[in-house]
Amino acid sequence: DTGVSQDPRHKITKRGQNVTFRCDPISEHNRLYWYRQTLGQGPEFLTYFQNEAQLEKSRLLSDRFSAERPKGSFSTLEIQRTEQGDSAMYLCASSVTTDTQYFGPGTRLTVL
Amino acid sequence: QKEVEQDPGPLSVPEGAIVSLNCTYSNSAFQYFMWYRQYSRKGPELLMYTYSSGNKEDGRFTAQVDKSSKYISLFIRDSQPSDSATYLCAMSAEYSSASKIIFGSGTRLSIRP
Image (cartoon, rainbow over all chains, first blue to last red; front, top):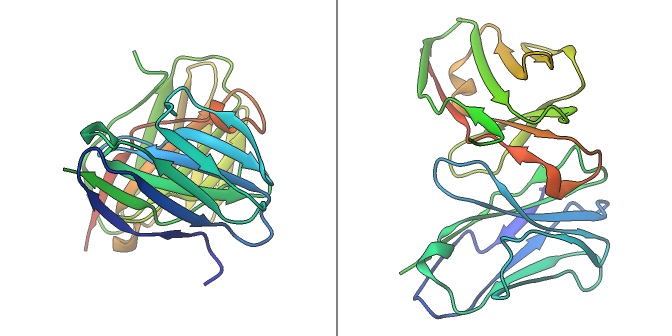
């Protein structure tokens, strides 16, 4: 499968724990995006990388959130000191142009 | 008021019917309009992308943009049970600015066999 992959698909954690998600984009895509989607809502933009450079960050990305794309290939999103409000689907997308993004299946986070 | 409004549904229609999905928006600067389909437990999949006003057709799908009314539509002809999904509209005022893409909340569509 040459689509965007995300790992893990599901994560259950206790409040206060740290979690890390991984995204592997489509191989020739230099742009990578993270979104958060809560039930009954559309995706909300979190951050955007072009190659290894993080070019845009949303105000939603509090100081507990950090994202990296160290070699311009895969990316990680870490949430420190998780809160119940962090429970959501975290989506990764990749693209050649911003307008045609290809989404992965998402990581569903549940914070107890 | 949200920048992009979308009726959450659910919308249930019989197989073969024409489906009309709609979004309204308040920001007159939006120029780029997208429709995504999202199956349960999957990520969104881009269906249609249009720039400015007018119609665009792709197979059974037609996207329509009316900037004067700040209203966009997606029509699905000869609907199939496999079209059952949540449909998200998305729009942006700026080309190549991911942070400026605003998604609607999605309409759940069910096609009855």
